[in-house]
Image (cartoon, rainbow, N blue to C red):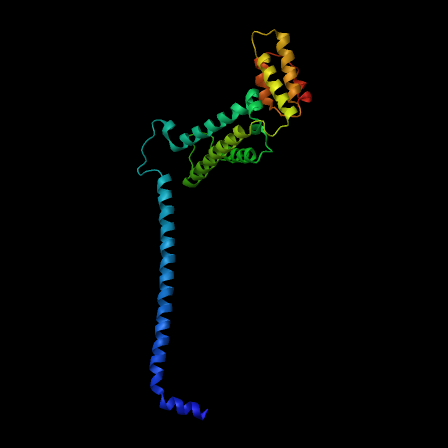
Length: 239
């Protein structure tokens, strides 16, 4: 230890630059820590401002202006959009011709169709009883997001179904679909005799059996078009 003490006694002045260097390093580290803390605060402030802006967008103005026509309220517009997408979906669900042309729209095994049906279920669950229902800003935001998801999911599923058409079927199955489409024209042709229309209807069902599952609504609509009076037990013979 004695040589070390001798060295320190002779070169004690070196301690000042060393301590100065350590202090400078410590100061730089402290400044970097402060900078990181300031950046975190800026991010938190930005998020807080964004949430406040979103809340202001959904909150009613003060004092609230009287609504003379509920058709122009945000909730009524959301419900109208909801109804519009539902109507577009029902065009596929209730029209046998469209079901034959774009079978993926009625096939819950298709991933995009399944995603649309899930989004529909959420939107339907969150739909308020009427446009005059009082919703909190959070409830309105949740319903708005659900309707948006519903619209987007439908558009994506529809585009995919129109792209796929009957490509998922084999050649013999596509021929059966073509035959069913031709027979469907006869089944709803008012110029055909009742017997011809009934025979065509039954053959449409036979051709689609095992290929496409028609909804009860589609069958009801088609039967009204064909003007058949079938027994209510017909579902036992449904595909």
